Length: 190
Image (cartoon, rainbow, N blue to C red; front, side, top):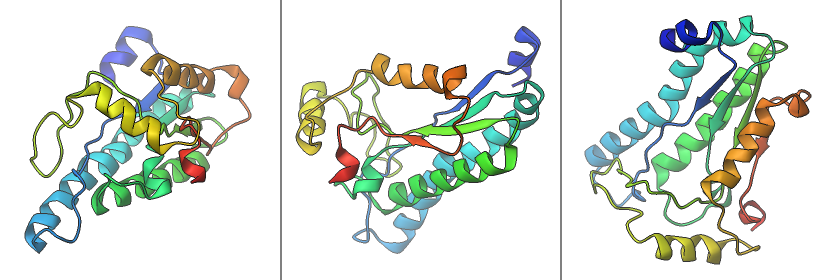
């Protein structure tokens, strides 16, 4: 944060975008293993958002009208397969963090979230279960999974999702706070 402030003199936008997946971990794991997975996911996917928002809050407040974006994922809303109990809980918690920040930092900071329904990137994901890298090794297979689970059959590119961040950072969204944009092809209505 200090580097950004030193370089620019102010902070206009903060994007909370760190996260890991639990690899679909559920109640089939031993209690100690599920405990470890859940703690790791919560530490990164929730506590990371909280601490990041805390670090950015005063600079964002000083710049009047800047915003924090928390990333989310529409799969947790629709109960889609692939997300385990820890990931699902973390995404609901991150949504709560976003709402709390929107209320607490108003009127000086707008806080919104983007919850895509799946975007294929070059990411070689690491799951909290230690299942390692490669959840997205087969990009075309991942595209098909995303396409098949949403009513519009769409698979967005990262650049298309990025446009929503640009919109939320612009004056065109000056009347929005506490909102979640869901470019998910209709996944959340299933």
